[in-house]
Image 1 (tube, rainbow, N blue to C red):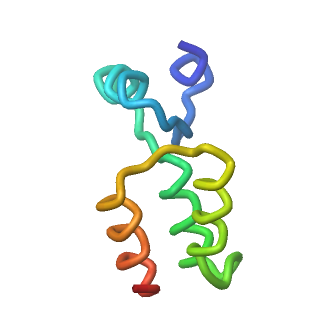
Image 2: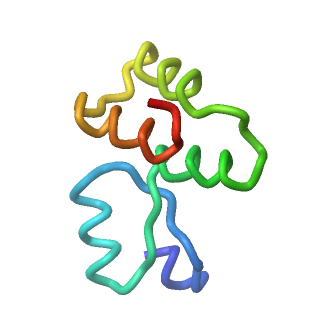
Length: 77
């Protein structure tokens, strides 16, 4: 796995199976929604809701409960 060869500190991955495989190899993972939350925490993004809504309109799949959980984590719900 390239991330292992490069000794990556963080691997961006959204697919469940790939995330599990990466974690089994000791890699730290973050998904798109986690990146958006991190961007807001660091002041690079004013709000995550518009970005998440754009992703959903573009076909990015997430459960309704995950949608609300991320918004709550961002303090936007």
